[in-house]
Every structure is written in C-alpha cells, then in structure tokens.
Image 1 (cartoon, rainbow, N blue to C red):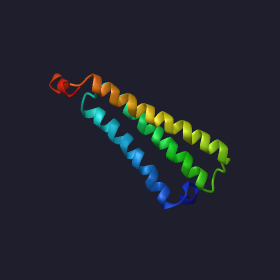
Image 2: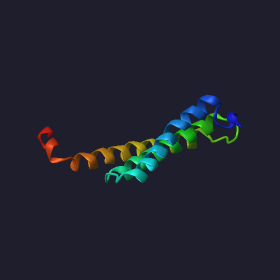
Image 3: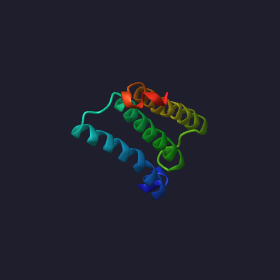
Image 4: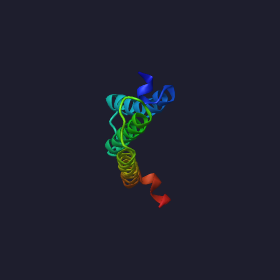
Length: 103
C-alpha cells in the first residue's frame, strides 16, 4: 500500500501537513483562536491535498496524466500561498497596540 503514494518517503511527506492540521484543530479545542485561524487551517489543508496529488502521481494506484497533475498541483500551490498570505495579513491587521510602532 505504501507504493500507492510513492513509498515511505511519501508517507512522511503526507504526515507533515496532516500533523499541522491536527495541531490546529487540537489547539482550537483548548483556546480561543485568532481570526486568522481559518486561513491557516485552509492552508494546511491545501498543503496536504497538494502533497497527496504529487504523491499519487508518483505512486502506482492512480495514474494521473502529467498535464492534469501539474495543473492541479499548481492551482493548489497558489491556494496554499494565498491562504497563508491572507492569514498573515489578517494577523498583522489585528496585532496588539504594543506592536503598532512596527509599521
């Protein structure tokens, strides 16, 4: 089954964004998250799906044509960057007053 996602290296590559998602949801259960939380969660989700698409393209289960895999991967990468960018912009706009001098 590991060959489906490109071997053991594919499993570790998938584990990184999945652990990030789990930490985001676990942290939300114990604290009140910032408004930018949803953008970070979407970013980790896009990262996971992006990695999954790339690993499935390398694996043996699904043969995704190269053009489709690259297009989907590129769109997911843009969504990932946009989500993390929106999270940072939201966090920067809502920063505490003691950080206002950093403008």
